[in-house]
Image (cartoon, rainbow over all chains, first blue to last red; front, top):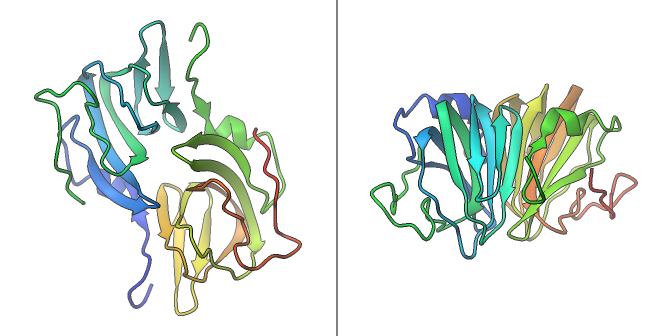
Length: 124
Length: 124
C-alpha cells in the first residue's frame, strides 16, 4: 500500500503484542462498534450487558461460554453472539485468543464491576 | 448445548452451504449490525457506501481491495475496515471466503446498483 488510507490488520501480529489475560485491546472501530482482541485463560466473572449484544469469534485455541443453564464449547473459526441481558461467563482451560465485536463503550465485566474490569482500552 | 439459547456458528460449516460468488449470506445480527459470509472470485464493481463503514475479514484464501489510489492485499486472518464514502473494489484472482460486518441494510454494491446487487439476503 502507498499513501495514507485504510490499512489492513493482521490478527496474529496484533495478538503477538500482548500476553496478559482478560485484558481486551482495541484494533478497530466502525459504525459505533469496536473490534477488540483478548486472550482468555481461567474463569471470568459471571456478568451480563444490559444494552449490548456481544460477538465472540475464536481466532486460536478454544473456550467454553457458560450460561446459567448450559454451556457452549467454541473452537477456532467459530463465533457466538451473546444477546444483551443474558448472563454469561467465559472459561478457558488453556489460553484462547478471541476477537470481540461489540458497541463502543461496552465494559468487559458488564454489570459485575470487579478487579477484572477494564475501564480504559488501549489501541494496539 | 442443551435447550434453546445462544448457539455457536461454525464459519467453515456455513461456507460449505453455498458456492456462488458475490452473494453474501447472513449468519448473525447484533446491535443493528449484520454478520455475513461471502465468496469472492473475479472483479466486483467500484462502489462506496454513503453511510456505512464495512469490515472485511478473510477466512480462507486472499483478495485485493482496490482503492482509487492504491490497493491492499488481504490474506486469511487479516481484516480491513473501509470507511463510509471511500470508493473501493474487491478483486480476487482465486476464490476467497470473507466475513463481513456492517450495518443491517447495507447494500453490497453501495451506490453502484447493478446485476450484482443483492437486495434480499438469506440466512444460512
